[in-house]
Image (tube, rainbow, N blue to C red; front, side, top):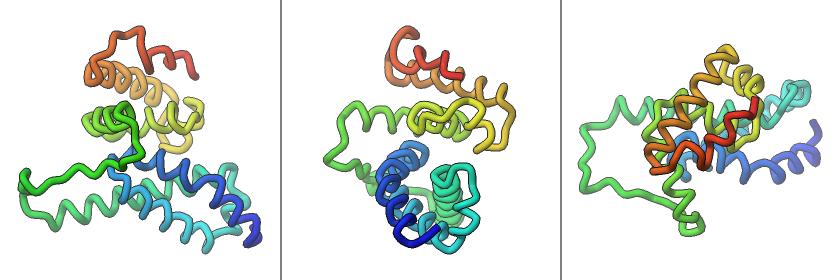
Length: 170
């Protein structure tokens, strides 16, 4: 992948990837840092990236893994958090619905959250989610179903609203 082609790839997908990783992690600043680092790594591996079926999936997976690694490092080194000092840093450009969705996603188990984000926000098929996460298709379907049900409860929606209609995306 030449520099000009890589620059186009970066420009076309950076914002989208930050939004996707933000939805998975719940921290916009961390998502931006991790996506940026993933693109730095992608530049170093651009030969393999060019051969990859989905360069965007490669960057997204790398960014997600970086976020998980950073989180683990932080948790190992952190004392019990002082709730009075915790601050929610939601961008001013985010709608209240978006903030509520990300807050609800934070309450879900990581595997369900990741499946929901990849399927509904990244618009990947169930098979693509399975391939990216390394689990069977049936596991992805179960995570999506359980995650949608939990989200509806957290967001106070009836089963006929919102993500429940997305259940037919397979």
